[in-house]
Image (cartoon, rainbow, N blue to C red; front, side, top):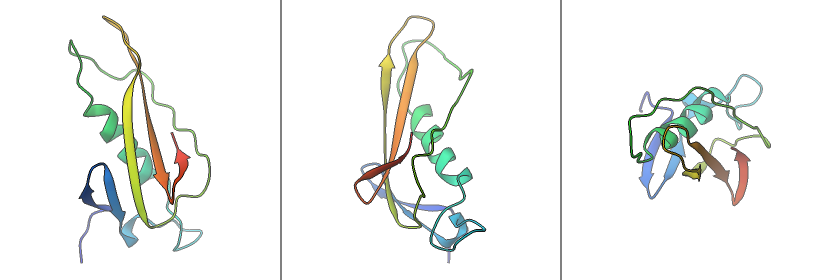
Length: 98
């Protein structure tokens, strides 16, 4: 058994482990691990200059199941010194957080 929240499956897909489950139900996740998965995807985006995050907002669109998840990230508004980036977390074909 692993101590990780997720096992990478490739192509932005991750298998959730039981460590990501929340206190309300063993079938849904506490939103700390999914939020970290979104930030990890944002940190991996290429930039033209060194950048740092000044604000991160996570919009929760529904329960995140302890199941396979996929993450996508991209630059929504490029800039020389300021950029707007975004990421989406999907479970079962629906967006559960962004």
